[in-house]
Length: 357
Image (tube, rainbow, N blue to C red; front, side):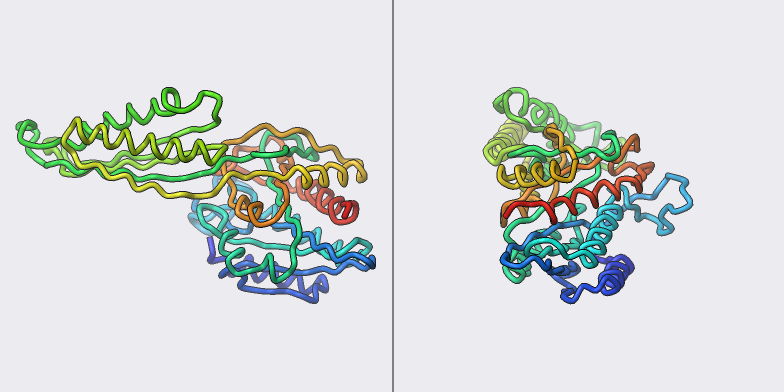
């Protein structure tokens, strides 16, 4: 996530080659920020555009000649493509500075399961560069190349994770009455948790609870002392997040009372809802129209993005561009379509040159 020596070196080399006079390294541990000044006078507005740089701990199975050569590391979400888009945008802007204000290029580490955006915010890059608005982009498999989509308000879900530790009393399998079975308690928890969304949350809410692991015991004839469940919560509002967390606690307390097991819920807040500002979406759409581009209305999605932290700090918007008929994101067979680079650059150049300030 943060360990990106070759990627960072490549980005820095290209930025210097483009003639970026202001480049800051190690922003929020491993981030890079570069500033390109426009030459249209009378305006000091600062637009920031963010790209994520990190890969995923996946073994690539595309069979491509350009596939990852590093075991257990793969750009299975297209962040290499996002970085290429922002570098190409920066190259063009540095050579054609007929735009208002200035553009700040933000290269962010640790989007995948980390808090790279929050770390960069904590390092003060928003204040340091006087950023007034910020935008981000992600490729989307299944959407045609050269197309775009976004929406006002919530676009991507908040993402939390939880770990439930069940402590019982171990015993021989032949004498279950002498112990407290954490596996039985865990099985009851699985059943109860899977009814939270359908029975305890407003059906008009958009949310999901998914259990990802259930681990207990090591052999067939011993009831173990402990069991552990892990899972994730996705929601499109902070109210729903709060309601689900409370419901999980109630379920844990109830099963603990029924089974005499001790049940501990460790609930960890993750990325907030990715929520676009009306004014920023309007800015995107207007700039796109002037560049003869069309931005469709995006559906809601339940995956998350840590760009949401940046949208809490400044007005902005997140936009999708199509990746064509590729494998899904985070799939070992995923392949970023290089044709999407052109589409991404067009969107960012339209925003830089045609935004109204």
